[in-house]
Length: 431
Image 1 (cartoon, rainbow, N blue to C red):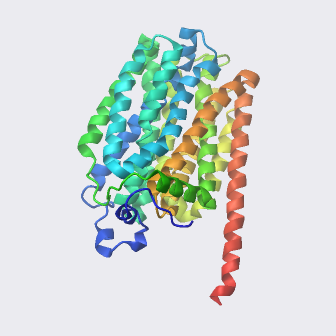
Image 2: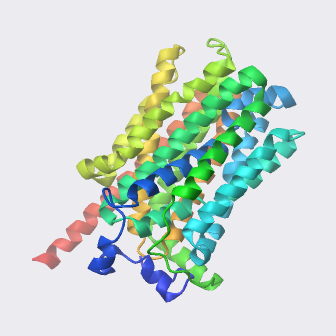
Image 3: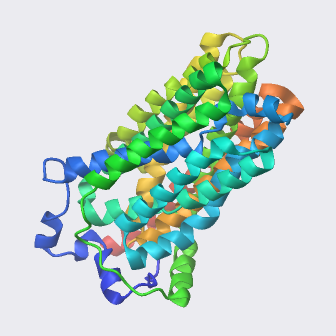
């Protein structure tokens, strides 16, 4: 990819430069396992990841109850999820640009604070329209956190530890998604969906406090001035990079599968032949623990299989889970969800960490573009999954997921062919 300005000062570009351009003293000062601050950083971002996914998907396990409360269809109620993820996707790039000026740590703190405050208001929404609007505001607020977190890690953590550090942040996402859904499921069964949303707000408050007091100060960030033209040049440079484009598409397609499955699964499980109560449906999200393990293990998968090999394994696991979930036996459905979750989180961790390693300049913008594609995939998956479920039942949702999986396979196969062609082209030059 041709070098492009970040929209910040020259010093800001140098601060996010490739590890090979850093001095030995600077590189050894970066965080890594065993060094002071690494554990605090990991715990703080783990808490931020919990809050992000708990808030962002707080209504997902409650969709049948929301539909019943407002007399809405599955497609209409799904907008309480899609509005949040869609707003996040639209706002993540401009807020990541602001992080170049005001700092990653400051942006993450501000985003989490605003999202938590909105989360405490959402339970009092008087109508479905108000609920969707507040969820959109909350998603926009959360937009400052994911890309800033990725850029913060790329700047503060040694390259060899980067995939593992990002894996821990993604693991926090999975824990947040799981705990938020389980909490809302049981609270909704006892006291209703509004009380359930308020409980998620309180969980996010606790996570925000932990983040504020635990996150280390940035040591390798230099603020720069905001320059819209330079920002556009940086974004254009990233979009012109074929590898980054493929990684963005892979993130979007993986999240299309995940968004569709977990938006619709509640409707399937409360209906015959399962007819599960709301609390049990919420507890189904315990399978997110599998995502915690698979995302944290992404670094080891890449070390053993390579990036594309890890993606092939992730996508195969996801496809197997989709097919298995078609059965009408609850154990088979649960195992299918386990495989879908494991494959998704592994694929997401590999793709997102690959973006951070591929972009040598403008890392915040590179991560922001990935997050935009990722959450647009979530928004599209949630809405299209609900539409497919309405049209063809769970088989329709699975068909949508398999189509997205086929897209990931096609992109990865193309990337493999391109890499082989590049290696063959280099052979004469090395003789």
